[in-house]
Image (cartoon, rainbow, N blue to C red; front, top):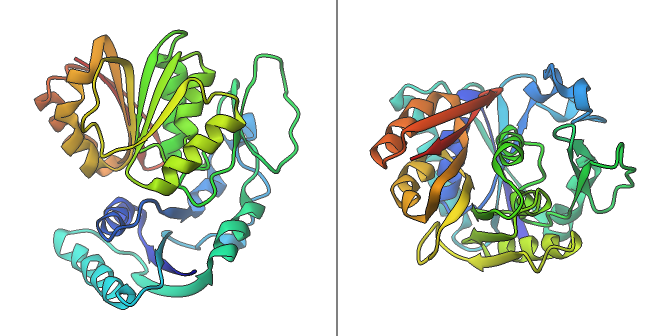
Length: 311
């Protein structure tokens, strides 16, 4: 099968809005190339990111990549994406370089070319994400090494929103907890939650590719008995109550989701909402307050924010 890699070169400010345009066009995940990762002050602390090539990143702004199958309707979808992208200026967003380009690639190229850039990431002193094909030796006996093969699903652990989600899980997940991971992607957060001691994780995603990737990564980490994976839209038809609900998606979806979360939380439970661009933080907080959440804590990394909310 042939695919189209759609690249939008824009500003960091517009990145979440562009990701949402891709989402509305039927894309289930995006790749964000942001040169800011080269200058993070914390990357030498744990060695989170290394062997990065500056020439692979834009000189300014960010490049957001998405993939769509090369079908007869592709050209119409690309034109619609371009119109919606340019229309963002009408809402006061700076679009930076404001460039859209399309590259046709084969599925084999897409599945394998990116692997050379995916290296072990030490997210915290305790948690390291390791690609399946990379050798790695534990630094200490308490280190939790997460084996990952994202395949075509979104989620390698290097994006700030994923890092923030993992940090929040490390803080809030306790042994014996039950967790829901909404929009599980590659399953990285589900696996982290189980490794941290959750006895049950319900991993949900609309994309069947993500569902299969999560199942595979649960097996890779010998956690298939604790991670249930289901093709599902947000919390639709989900029953029961959970200690932690985590959603690393985008602000607009979290806003729509907020009202459904309290009914699925146990007393004292925590909703971890990530994938929020800093400019949208207050908008998300308003939605969470309207949903009945009253206690909040948040952490920021670059232009991204994760919020932990309790009723």
